Image (cartoon, rainbow, N blue to C red; front, top):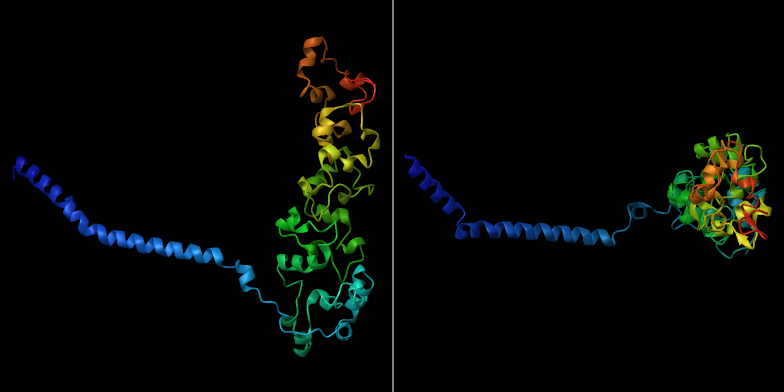
Amino acid sequence: MSDCERDSHSRLDATTIFHPRELRKHRRPMGFAWMILGFGIFTSLAQGATAKPPDAQNYVDPTSGSQYVGTDTCKSCHEDKFKNIDASPHYKTNLSKIRGEEVHGCESCHGPGSAHVEGGGDKTKIFSFKAAKPEQVTKRCMVCHESNPQQREFMRSTHNQNGITCTSCHSVHHSKQENLLVQQQTPLCFSCHAEQKGDFQKPFHHRVDEGLIQCNDCHNPHGTLQVRQLRSTPDQDVVCFKCHSDKRGPFVFEHEPVKVEGCTSCHFPHGSANSRMLTSARTNSLCLQCHAATSAIGHTQNTRLQQCIDCHSSIHGSNLSAVFFK
């Protein structure tokens, strides 16, 4: 076959393959396939939008259908646990009509126990906190504790979002610590917050290890509306002012970073290698982050022992000097 004939044959094949009439033969089946696929995706998305989350869908309350049997029945087998509860703040669940019909001592937390008793102590017939998932434990506890101002924000807290639930820190039956904690508060917090533990080992630090303050003096472990679960906002920093009352004010002349950004604009809250827990080793370096123009008006910043606060001694606020001299 000559080169011309080959070229002609190639053009003919191309015309035949890509002719619109030929394309229509393949377009309908392909379009129909895409229509079926699209319908399947739409159906699955619609079902997914109405389906319950897997945990909620698969979870079955082990006490459903059971009846309340009373604390005395629980006590007959679990006397040691009953004594521990009776000596704890949860003794109130044994008081009749303290919160209405839903309060039934042990069964307030573990659910009605008739099926558990009839099954000879079958653990699968009673709500077990050890076997439950964190979100199930939290919801059980919050039935009563959501009315407490210190605990009602727990569902939105950082701890809850990271799978830390009530029984991660509290032991209802066995605790000898304050607030039913599983151990003393400081080592308990440090068991997760290793970075903060290291900060408290630095030369200048808040005296948490020494027992003078505790983590919950500044943070609410059950959650707040503030970042890092702090108990206050920067402009109303009652956390720091509880101890540092001389810095509270109000002052006639306010230092803006103190009022707007809060104490942490200049100080590390847990600990620092710098004196006064400052974020910079030299006071001048810290001040010049905002007051860079001071070197243009004749202030020399190179003297080793010179510090801004030598003159601006009332740096947190003043009632007499607009430049915080006194």
